[in-house]
Image 1 (tube, rainbow, N blue to C red):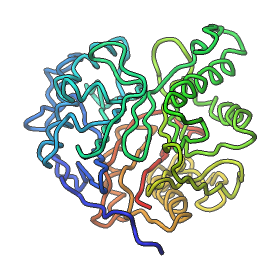
Image 2 (spheres, rainbow, N blue to C red):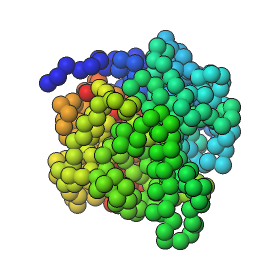
Image 3 (cartoon, rainbow, N blue to C red):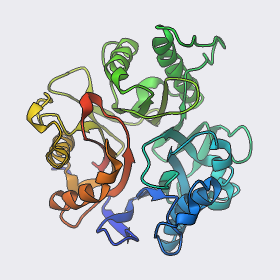
Image 4 (cartoon, rainbow, N blue to C red):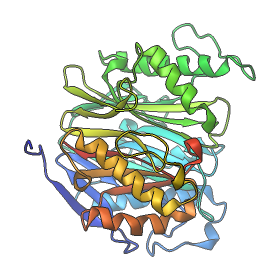
Length: 391
């Protein structure tokens, strides 16, 4: 096995004493676990008075991420990628308006964003997922934020290019609008969405083929297969990047939101294809990181077929999803212990604590930063996982 490019370091443990990592460093990469807005910043306990208080919850969720970075010797302005899972998107602009306070007046201009509504626990209105980079890494904004308190459209930093989550309501090249409430809306929006991603990536001299990961929130879970079919049509019969697709409430107009991470032009990219679908990436290795596609708790670890006996058994599905994820990482000679960021999608968000307890059997004291979100999953699965690991 080749020597790892960097060493995984757990810089901070979970504030709620759940044997989790709050902040993991891997060379220049800083991965932070999800932060909930309904928990008091000092006590980390749920504050009932924050019910329906969007801005105070934003200050808690983002403030905790900035505080974690500070405790590890960094700063909120070292953030680069923020994914936001919310109870609503009507207050999206107000939410991002709090960024300068937590990510810095200059730093927040470089942060790229992705957001969708999700199933929230109790009074929580925001789970903020943040990745940072050490301050020595140069950031280059390729398409700037439109106004203060908004996200960068695309930022190149280190070995990767971070691309904002976009919707396909229009075509960036022709300005044509997608139709609504008709059958062809889905295919049109899917095409326009990737046209927006392409328009951003091309600003840095790259192409869509440079994508290594695409995060997709769909308004209808039943459209996952349709989305994958559309991607194959777009990319010459294959999906050449790690991807997950989940169903969320999404909010607002449009059927999907998709954000991406691309390797910089000239960087290395290797693809391990799924056994059951040799034209869809199971994992992608790029510039020292491994990106794993969605691993369903219903899928056979090696061959991917649905294991019908697991329906309704979320504990068994949690373990199966971890096995499936490990099989993906093994394709590039890495393991669960090298997992840096674990994205956990649960049909029942109240399964969170039990899921965390199950992971101890697999990570054995070496946990990743973990982000847990409530969504709808393909085939009515209970659990799906996606991950970034050290190569």
